[in-house]
Length: 404
Image 1 (cartoon, one colour):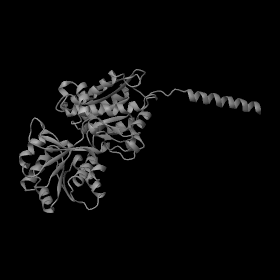
Image 2 (cartoon, one colour):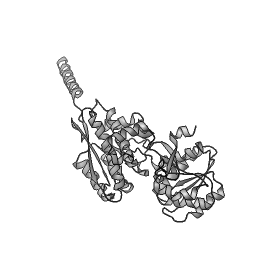
Image 3 (cartoon, one colour):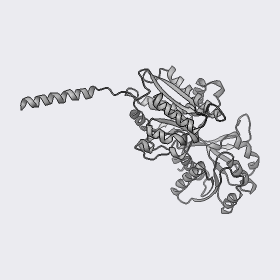
Image 4 (cartoon, one colour):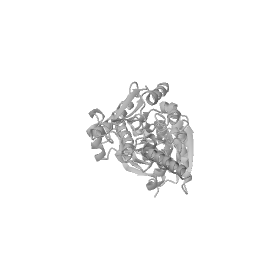
């Protein structure tokens, strides 16, 4: 009996030692000298004006990291294919990236229709996906514990529902509104922005909401505007993107409204400012959120040092730089440990990530909301100081601080 016990003890000790010394292998796309990541994005056609600078920003950040010694002695290699903003090509590209190229992660996925088509496949593969150039609701997760729930999905820029909450926090915390009017479109962007507004209003005391829906792309928002005017709202949130926003704003001016207007960062471009500036001058101000604060001079100088000169003033390139920074922060947190998908995603969750240009993002407890901090800009006439027709008026601020 003693001899049998001794044999069993030896077996246990041998197995235990083997278990302790077993090497945990890195996940796919990782070698002793390289970390391979990539994306598909439109770098030809009409959306190349987004895809090309976005990728330029990502590659610039990786180049800075690589020339600084890399991560744990590994350099980051960026693989890219042009999906031409085509959902079918995006699905084929994802399969190639995961199954053929064996990439470690997807960084900087771009385009609402493409991402909507591939998001379920991303979750099924379980590959870490950091930064999406869209705010669609399919990216949102609260308390995710499985990839099916979105655990491996890490949005950085604001999701529309999160932004709806931020717009509401600005309306009440900065403009002291107690009766908020919302005009929202019947598409994903409008419906999800409105959902965020409703959710935030429900958490506030003494705030009333008056909401009207219009068709996306409508040329006539008069009925919706009349409803808000008759209700006597303090502020108007325009939860609509692209051409619908100027239509609504100009109708507000035409009906003599004087309440300030808040809208999404998706409208914070020269097309919106030039379309509405004449109509609103002397009547009311139009504000839009922003999550890229180019007034952060330290961050900007670092970005401008590494990015190609033609992209030094490009907001999409800045967004790519932020995408690269968010991805690399996760790598830095795994330094000295096996670079596996599990370790990497736990590292992203372990603490809030401070992003270049002012914002931050927190993935703790399985929450995938994108950044919850945004700045505010106002429509002004185009000038040398405001080449896009927008002037920054509030720094990047989070919801909690806005509501204090």
